[in-house]
Image 1 (cartoon, rainbow, N blue to C red):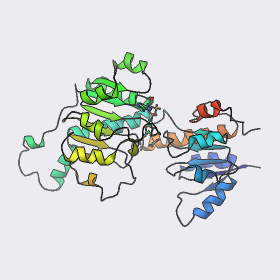
Image 2 (image 1 turned 90 degrees about the horizontal axis):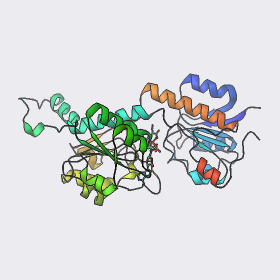
Image 3 (image 1 turned 180 degrees about the horizontal axis):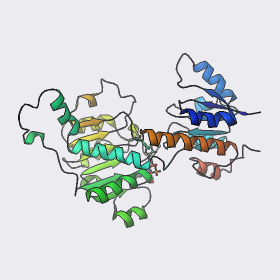
Image 4 (image 1 turned 120 degrees about the vertical axis):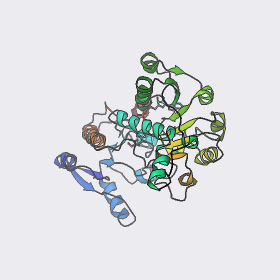
Length: 334
Ligand SMILES: NC(=O)C1=CN([C@@H]2O[C@H](COP(=O)(O)OP(=O)(O)OC[C@H]3O[C@@H](n4cnc5c(N)ncnc54)[C@H](O)[C@@H]3O)[C@@H](O)[C@H]2O)C=CC1
Ligand SMILES: O=C(O)C(=O)CO
């Protein structure tokens, strides 16, 4: 008999078929109040789950009494309670690497848009305010040759640093839990304590995961340390920064601008003060959102679930360290 799995995201047909060939799939393209009861009923029967963009805390996961493996169509795993899953011996699979280059492209777009005031200038044209040659009040600032400070020099941080170093002759500096020797050797990156990085960077980009250690990593104190000319970029998760403190820094001109792909609350409510600030460039969480990369992520997540339900978590398991620490993983193939 086929194992039951729960799919809670719309995915391309060919990937759906790969799941359907192997599993008995219950599919919820979206979960809302009208289908939540049915969703929980399916969750209680599922040996595997696959999807993204839905909170999967212990309160939800404890309904998944038969669960053997979870697969998220994302590299970020903050929607899940990793320790809870590990405590039950359940691996959480994720999709690293396939989205590095696309997400770094998005981050560099934010850098260019904020520095050159691209959205603001475009609005000037489309709103009929371009009535004479622009003056210096509309000038941007250069990106090439400036200093790029990266907080979280992991897979995506490195891909961003590559663009800055090779494409824009930027000086790369970073802070990270561990030294990134590849970035130092390949990109001449300098490791700095956070405080020094904040004080000396022209562009500061946060690319850490959201964890209990990184929640509100950047707040009023950190914004106050940045140069008045600094441009702040967040592509990690909204909760890694104190959004109110950022709004204050932008509104008072204590930093120059911010480019944001992620927010404390998503979708960003239209009454957020961020929406009124010309020096904030706001994207609707599109870091990895190209057709090619989203397909690769789905494909990777499908492979991950198939392998994990066969007992193989050697690749792409996000809570492997927690499972190993308590020797909790027992192969679901057993
Ligand atoms: N905006 C978007 O669409 C996307 C956002 N993301 C976010 O980016 C995050 C990072 O992704 P990857 O680069 O693949 O992860 P990664 O694990 O390769 O890199 C993260 C780096 O942050 C460092 N780090 C962790 N805690 C830190 C701390 N307290 N201080 C300094 N450094 C710390 C780690 O040592 C690691 O090197 C994801 O977890 C996800 O939340 C990822 C993809 C797309
Ligand atoms: O993969 C992730 O973590 C994202 O945020 C979307 O690509």
